[in-house]
Image (cartoon, rainbow, N blue to C red; front, side, top):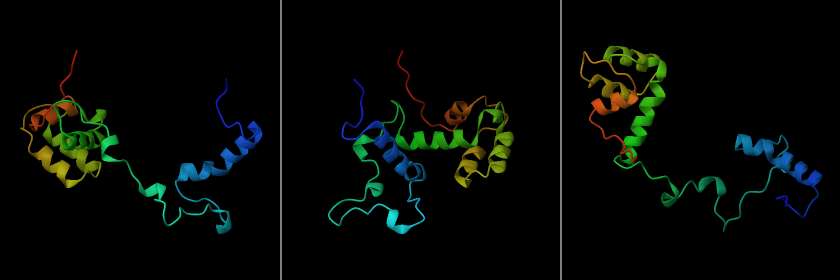
Length: 137
C-alpha cells in the first residue's frame, strides 16, 4: 500500500509540497508578497521554530566521554582535517591559524608536547589528557 495523503490526489499533493519547499529549505518565508506568508502560531501555541531539541531527546555521549569532550573533539576535527596529519605541534598550530580557528583551540594545541608527531585528531585529543570513548567489541 502506498503511503501518503488520501485526502488529495497525487497531483494536488505535489502542488502543496512545492508551495512549501522553498520555506523548508531556507527555514524562513520565501514569498515576495507578505500576504502569501503563512500565519504565525497563535498566542496560546508555542513557536515551532523556537522549540529546539528537548534535553531528553539529545543523543547521549559515547561511553567514557562527557558531552563537553565530544563537542571539543568535534571542534578540533572540524579545524584539523585529514590533510593536516601527520604533523607536529607547530604544523597543527599553523593549520589552526590558517583556518581561523578559535583561540581556545589554538591554546589547547600549544599545550601539546613538542617533538611528537600526531597522526590524527584522536591522538591529539588523547595527548591533551581527555578521555577517549570506550569501544565494545
